Image 1 (cartoon, rainbow, N blue to C red):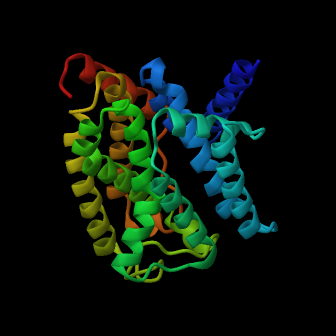
Image 2 (image 1 turned 90 degrees about the horizontal axis):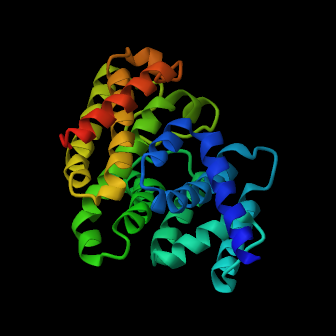
Amino acid sequence: MKQLFDDVSFKCSVLVTKSYSTSFSMAVHMLAPSIRDAIYSIYGFVRFADEIVDSFHGFDKENLIIDFENEYYKAQKRGISLNPILNSFQHTVTKYNIADDLIQSFLKSMKMDLIKSDYNSTKEYQEYIYGSADVVGLMCLKVFVNGNDFMYEELKDEAMRLGSAFQKVNFLRDLKDDNLVLNRNYFPGFDLKTFDEKAKNDIIKEIEEDFRIAYQGIQKLPMEAKFGVYTAYVYYKKLLNKLENTPYHKIGNERIRVSNYSKAYLFANSFVTYKLKLV
């Protein structure tokens, strides 16, 4: 039965999400059951593409990402793929009418990671952020609004700002590994050698503005999506707060984390806030 295969495919996307990000998987679990699988499938797709360019050292990354892209388009044309991650993703793309230009922009940013190590200009930085994060927010928004084009257009900017905020927090948290392991510098104007307290605070100020605008969109989301997205927002705000309170030299030498105990507290507190209709 095809339905059984599709069910298995979506379960594989759930497994990928839980294996790679306990925080994100917990936030997805706060979404309405009717839309969880679709968000898991989006995460599975973007995670696998990201792993190709970030983790598959010693393999032909360029051909692997090209093969991954080609197999996706075969799946989209056929309506099926024996790769369960691509099968579940193409199902979501079709069901929620996710525009191909979003997928192309995402894959373009992934390929940029294979050839670029420094994003020296603001234009390059913004282009990468758009493709690697903003469009992922827009893919998820397509699911959240479930075909409501008016709501999608109304919330596009806020969804993109939330995607930007999440990605920039990741860049700041992963500053050491991006520079020393992957030889990449995403923030224009400085690297580990020039990173100081002022640079850190300038980046945080930029991220806080993204969060401020994004929060306005969260308040307007459908009930099926609001709690889950708010939970992710609270987690990343906490992580940003930890980074803000960490001396710049420690950010450049270690990876800052939110403890599991703190995560549990944050999620519980988010639930209370949501139930009291404070968001």
